[in-house]
Length: 227
Image 1 (cartoon, rainbow, N blue to C red):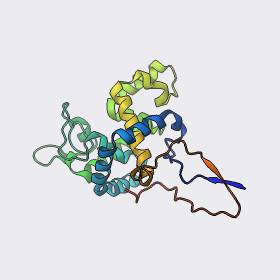
Image 2 (image 1 turned 120 degrees about the vertical axis):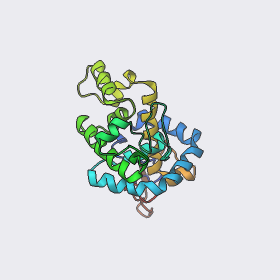
Image 3 (image 1 turned 180 degrees about the vertical axis):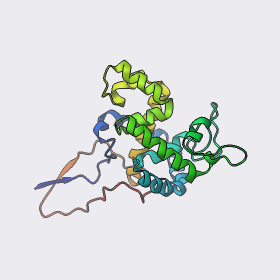
Image 4 (image 1 turned 135 degrees about the vertical axis):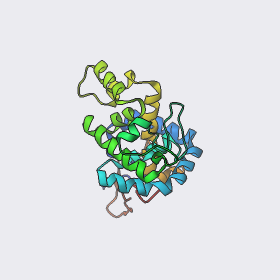
């Protein structure tokens, strides 16, 4: 007998793996309660994911951030928030201009997926540098602003705090936003299991296998081609 990785175990992106236990119940509920929305978003996002990944590779930005337009705009170029944020990535006017987008007249580049994704990649690059490459703090700042996250870190009295250390000091909307971000990325990496209703978070990491048995090992690379 010997131990192998369990092919039925739910996989997590490397950047989110450390806090599997804190998120698995939320991901489990979200995958059930929002199933129709998730399928619709991933189907709609297929035409955008490859472009986002190509741009993120160029700027060395984590792949996981490609999920944000699903939460921000439902992949709609014409989405407008009550505060006036526009487009796929929901840029406010001042921030859009800061990151090189033209927004005057009829040609609002916030509605151009490639151009706005380049601006988003530059923005995320800056935020990641500020937050020591912490993806979840970057996502939180994207939702509520860097200043609110800085205040939350200050309240935690931990200069090296991560999202889990400061979440109680963040707005409830931001906490939900970050958890949805985690859920979408976990589901993306396990999309076949999700579609076939086989997302089982109780599967162990390792399983025993007799020497005479054989089992096909899954491809553990981030599922760039599965969506």
